[in-house]
Amino acid sequence: MLKKERHDFVMRQINLHNRVLTSDLVQLLNVSEDTIRRDLQELSDSNRLFKVHGGALSKSYQSSFDDSSVYAKDAKISIAKKAISLIKDGMVVLTGGGTTIIEVAKLLPENLHATFFTISPFVAIELAKYARIEVILIGGLFSKNSQVTYGGHVINQLSEISADLCLLGTSALHPTDGLTDTDWEINQLKKTMLNFSKRTAILCISEKLDISLRLKVATLENIDYLVTELPADEAILNAYHRKNLQIL
Amino acid sequence: MLKKERHDFVMRQINLHNRVLTSDLVQLLNVSEDTIRRDLQELSDSNRLFKVHGGALSKSYQSSFDDSSVYAKDAKISIAKKAISLIKDGMVVLTGGGTTIIEVAKLLPENLHATFFTISPFVAIELAKYARIEVILIGGLFSKNSQVTYGGHVINQLSEISADLCLLGTSALHPTDGLTDTDWEINQLKKTMLNFSKRTAILCISEKLDISLRLKVATLENIDYLVTELPADEAILNAYHRKNLQIL
DNA sequence: CGGATTTGTGCGGGTTTGTGCAATATTGAT
DNA sequence: ATCAATATTGCACAAACCCGCACAAATCCG
Image (cartoon, rainbow over all chains, first blue to last red):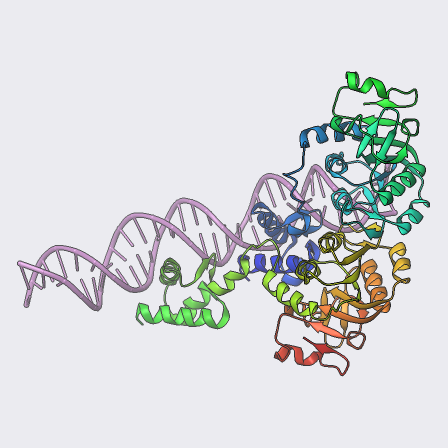
């Protein structure tokens, strides 16, 4: 059998099943392991598949979303990096949705060993790329606006969780009014998420500071960390200092 | 024997078997290797075949190398369109994951009014774009391989659903072995999904027909519709006719 | 017609490619 | 931390390839 034919066979298998095992191919094609490895190596070099220990995966399967149009991406990346410093090995982390949280999911250290609960499919998909992270996607009604699951079913499931840390994006944050939002269901959701986490970090780009919306989610006292893209001693952040609120 | 005759002979072999080996041609035509190589070189120069180390391949065979991001997308679109004809207003539909199902989600009629349960975040995200479709994402452990939620929690939630139609992609389908798969958890999942739906449609590109894998999901008797990209009277589909199985 | 030229083919020898083997290192599951 | 499965590396060797050359048959042309 010609090399090219083997390559084609491998690609066919991959496209069919999204993955191939080196050992399977050895049997199917009746050649040595070395040959298969070299084949996979070459196909990988030419970007036709994604080689992993033990076999290979389909490329399209691993592709990410187009995020070139994310607003204020640099600021969000800087926020994400700070937030990641709060996450330690072995933690159970609960996250909401939103582009800032997705940046967090993209920038985690490769060897982090943790469990993540999330209501955002986008976050789940990003997290699934880490070998050592267990991802639980909390199911329920799927919101067309905020692209997270919500509703009674989600609330029920949250109440069974006990997380070490909750990462939340924000609509608005205000020194006296605290965390506020506009959507009733999302509001309920965030309240519940805070409730069932030991600690809470609010991820908030500076332009959402000092704004107050109609529905109250939590006071500043209920929040443990405030993460912005600004240095912690920036003037605008002064109003947010509370004894239990750490700004970073 | 004249050069032209040899060329014709080579082309005939290629059209017949999709490939030729240099060594075979040497024997068959009783000429030196160099001559054959020169022949192949010339035929390759004039784009009549694809030369590789050890022989040559047919150009059409070569076409299966085209790297569109999703494999066999046209076929999947054609399958999706047929599957969509099964979905009526007011239905409760349960879907699995996979690229074929995602095509379905992309091609639904804009004014369809229905409820979709799905274990695939990708499908949920696509479905969320339709104003009149209610999307429930079933939550649970998120599988890094198949990019769907799975595990006991998912099974539990499925058991509370009663769907009118279940749309399932396939790893393999076989006339006697029925629907089979390789992954134990996914296997359980598919079984449960079938269980809690009144009717089931299997979406299957023809390449996955007549293949049987290790784990059994369902017999053909448990399936109501088989959707492929082929016309329903194609020969390969004959073996799949059962009195309760509608092929489209 | 006869010499020059082109074309097709084969041969020798040096080079590249494809494959397997063995020794060693890495990985990942427990 | 340990161990079996999987990868990597270096090597060997045969098969396939390329290049230049020779030579004969076919072709061209004055």
